[in-house]
Length: 358
Image (cartoon, rainbow, N blue to C red):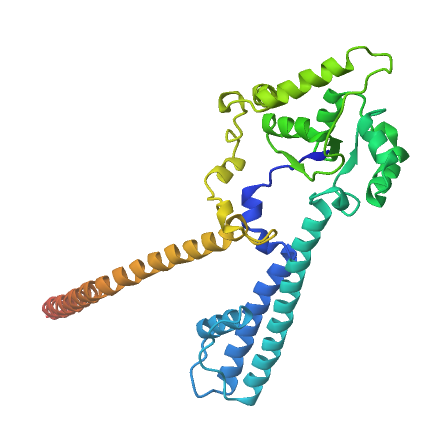
């Protein structure tokens, strides 16, 4: 036996920025506000009691942000008032960092424990899936007659609510599994086949009997013949060929699980780590950390853009100064010419008035 369940595909965009989830949106906004307020207080204190180094608003914003993320802060204030504000802010940043790390670790651990299925022992622990098997089936009888306490507990759980946990047909069971909230205990051959033929279906655990037999009536006359035929099928490899034919379909018959809508199609472009590395289960993958790389890349591109603007301003500054100087000269020349014209006009007007009076 094994366990068949559906694992809904996570939104890759949400997964990439999962590192933001430990803190609420308003908490992130409050952190940004604390950076700005602390920077403003430091800048005002510097104006009231100047430090040895300059602490303009631009510099204090950088210092506050660097302190929050435990980065390079550069010089520190040497005045007691500014030092007190800086020390209190460092304590605030340390507490926030500890709260972030513990919440992120607890969130990932709880998500994995509450939704992960590895074997029959993990079913009672997780909280995402109900589980069960077919009504009146040999699988239910196997759990009922088992001496294993885990299988006995599984039988008690399934029997408590047969309407929800004991499907009557294979189609009903697969439909319940497709809903993403039900795990089916079924024979491993059929579970493996259904997992191959349906996207997002997964198989976990192998437990129960290691072999299966045919039950015949006591009065059956052909039991020896049937035994010889079965042994012959096994010896000649015909059984394995039948298995390959019916339970191991070729790739051409498998569903195309890469044809997904956006943003789920992004998962096809995120590299998956090969199994040969044997990465520890639950470790952070590229999907979990790609958002940090995106922010870093965006920061690098923004920095490059600002550097280009600074370069353009440096190159244009001499030209702007030259244009400004030429404009100032033209204005002075125009003003001087206007003054001479006014003086000449006034002189002519005065002479005309004298002549008229004369």
